[in-house]
Amino acid sequence: MIKKVNYKKIVQLYILNLGIYIGIGLCIFIGDKSLIKVPSNIFIIFGITLAPIVEEFIFRGVIMSRLKIRLGIIPAIFISSIIFGIVHFDFNIFGRLLFGVLSALLYIQTKNIINCIIFHGLNNGSIFIFPIISQYTNFSINMDSEFKTNVLIFIIFSCFVLSVVLNIIYIKNNLPRKDSKLS
Image (cartoon, rainbow, N blue to C red; front, side, top):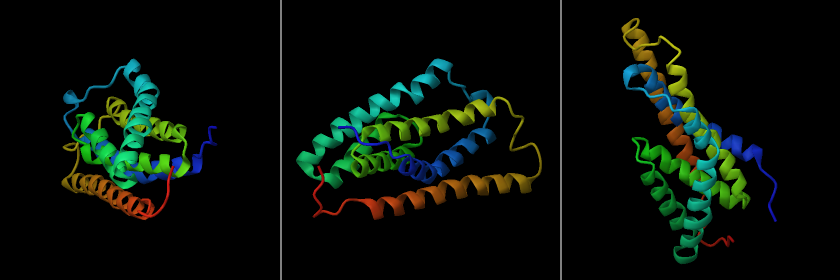
């Protein structure tokens, strides 16, 4: 039996995690535009549809579920999330780790992998937005004053740090208790 999709929980976790992508995404705006590669339409479509389906079934549906049987729920959440972060091969491994833990908690709380797939697709869409937008803007860190540069760096840093702190608080408050029984 597939349970109902929990859009409220998905949006809550998406907003919680969005600051990481805003912080990293704004870095794209201040970087060297010649280094930014806009993903192809096929890659974007794959990234917001097939990739979340496959990855959620692998990392939450198979890896986490098997580890839960052998090691318990909390180690299963963190080990599957660490593997998830590592296999993405990018500089945002910490953000991927946090996302993996949030997705694992979503799966545990809702017992519905569809929620995780939707959440994953939204996050992947956020990653693709900034390279695409950066191609259509003339924004540059050297464009105006040092004050604007400092404000932008403050915004980037604040978005990232606030999101990481809120993610950690959420994770700490929502980790299953050792004595709780989860299926």
